[in-house]
Image (cartoon, rainbow over all chains, first blue to last red; front, side, top):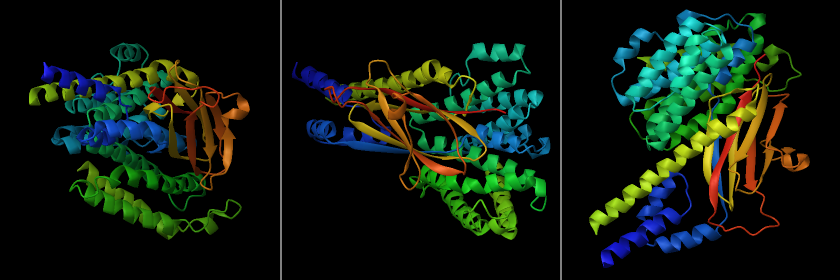
Length: 283
Length: 144
């Protein structure tokens, strides 16, 4: 009877405390004095801070708004899918294919979008992500293959479900790798779409350089797992990328001429660095 | 005792996942429609929040893109007071000035990181401090 009472009390304590991030919860469970934890939690004012990365949809829209032409050869080949055999390579590939899917969908390449949608759904399933898209929505999409809004709606759902389900399953490393894969692929698609010396590409070059603003979020996503052997080389590459962003941006003063704001030598090095990081991630 | 502890822990984990998953469904069914003709960027920023907690979201927004920010919460929770601040902590928008509206459309003159600061409106009422519920922030993009 005493054991049952203890268990009931324990369940009560565990379920009545506030829901917080899983990492913090783990610490709380380990605490020897739950009652004290609850008391301090209820009286102390807390602030939670989150860093949000631009999604591949947002970056694809920035490329599309710049009026650049879709280049199918930039996409990561769907034939590589079978080569992604570990959960970490699949999570990175999921982010990469989500970015390719966004790029295709926003550019109204509907046949390619369907192909990449199937690839991302397969990858998501292989990672244990259930119902990445509502089956009703897929049925609707099959009947309206050229409905751009619907295609993008499905893409945003795949991206959101995949990332969130990984987080809910406490697979934070995989969730982070998926985000990084998507961000790097988006940056790759953008940097490979511009010619540094073309005047018509100057607006997109400036938008690409604006991505340095997201680096803080990217680093914060990876920081906790810095010592992980998968993350380590990626984190180091991102620090190199940060250096090249700084080198490429001469000034942020919008009143200045493009060439007074941008160091094209630095930008060309940045394009090469993004190419190398992406090459490392897809292989 | 070990078995009972395991059962309790499993119950807790299952309950946590259920709450998170309910929050995600709330985002899809109740918040996403508020984006209207803006497309959802695919980022889900949902959290189960206590009434005495503050939250900050840091995100880069880009010049040339029109955004809609939607902040929604479950019906039983107090209203949410949110502000947009730049990196110098200057207030760019305060929803207090528009009757604690839950959405805001904006376009920036220059790309920058914006801090979205949120807290519950609890000034004139007393709430049970252990009260919590789902709060979701979604970003919509205007498609030209």
